[in-house]
Image (tube, rainbow, N blue to C red; front, side):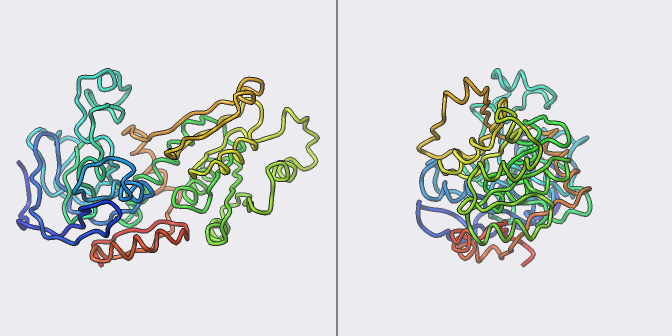
Length: 364
């Protein structure tokens, strides 16, 4: 194993029981094996999935160290790491999937341009922060294939929220596969994912329409000054949004609507609102996964040829491309930072629903 000098123990925030606070603990530093690498964590983001996991509605693996979006410096290499790609002291960002995929299933063998034997969709792969420990610790083991180099001038705090919130929304736009100038809606545009989606979408050349229903998140979305059209769902019905967008274009009803809509919240009302904004042959991209699921109109899907797709990021090429794009085009999360010891204060702030991203900064 290649390494630089390290202490034997570290601080970590550990969740021992669902619906309880994290506990700041002193634990041994893990040793990377196989294709793993050890990162000294620079920053770790708190995601909606962390809140869902902590409530007991996902994986039941406890105790657990959360965060599946983080960034840090490589400080140790497992024996099977490809050193042509990963070297000591590299700055990298990491997404939670896929940790140690099996390498032999259909997904791992039919993975497009990914490294041979590696797929984020492997049913046996782990997920850092959920089934294996994540970034709310000073050092973390990750699969060397689930990281991407951090381009300048991105900092660790810049990068951490991009590794899930940014990666997910960037992948959603890639899934749409639309030409520049297409009209795309973002439902939940002022949240952790949504405010990054506004930035990515505009920089990709789309005409963005943002929808939210809270004062704080609407204010955040508007303060970004992206040029996206922002609407308050409490005051504006979908038909009014479309009337404003199309103005005097004189389009027939069948031609009105958005080319695609990213549906970020877990609310059925948000889903319905986004669905009503789609034009015939439009595409709805579903990002959230509420326990009760979503209801949708099969009639609209058939007679209007509406398509619905889900998005789970995980392609290495998209991850690297996303970070380069964010660095080049100035895509940054609006962040509020906390030291590791104050993670429970961060969680309290998260539940206020103020938008943006909350990040543990290990330098604090």
